[in-house]
Amino acid sequence: MLEKINFVLVGTTHPGNIGAAARAMKTMGLSQLSLVQPTAFPCAEATARASGADDLLTQARVAQTLDEAIAKDTLILGTSARVRNLPVPLMNAREAAARMMQTVNSGGRVAVLFGKERYGLTNEEMERCHGLINLPTVENFSSLNLAAAVQVLAYECRMAALDAANENPLASFKAAQELEPVPHEKMASFYQHLFSVLARAGVFDRIPDTTLKRRLKLMFNRMRPQKHELDILRGILSNIEKKLP
Image 1 (tube, rainbow, N blue to C red):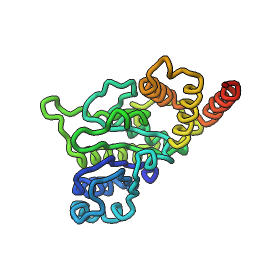
Image 2: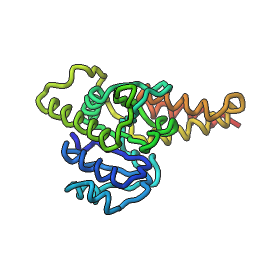
Image 3: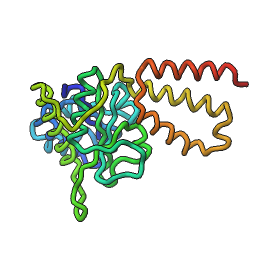
């Protein structure tokens, strides 16, 4: 189960945090590490902080874009130390881990996103997320080290996997069975098709395209359309496209 969970570090500035994150992952049985435009990698400091998790660093996938790092994943979850004012489903780490196990069991793949050390994920990065994981730290000291956040999520993933193996899923998660999950790359292609048709139809002439695009992405992320549903939507868009001047 854990082999299908991809921990994605976005724009990490300190190489030591990459090594410490790899160590945190390996202690909990996680091995899929992706790095999006790290400031310094490979790096001796990362290897030193990994403390024996060198294999995760060697196998880590380095991507130039976030879309590239999560292209094959069907459930995208972002992490945040604070609650954002975005219409994205919010959950704690335990609920998120249970949802990950349900997705993996139904044949999907999971990506967990961790943002830059100073300010976390941007709103634009969160547009790709189906859910947001909030770690409820105390109000007067909410700063959590990147590797510490990775450790918390890795621990909850391992506990959820052990519960699933014992046929005792976490009772807090009640979600519908995913029939045929859609990977991120197919959703990105759908959005490109949708926005192209809307532009040709003149929709963006009346509504700012940035605002509408963001709201549409967040809406479809909440809906989680299945593959056959996405095929229907693409077919409708193609028919509309033929009738446009």
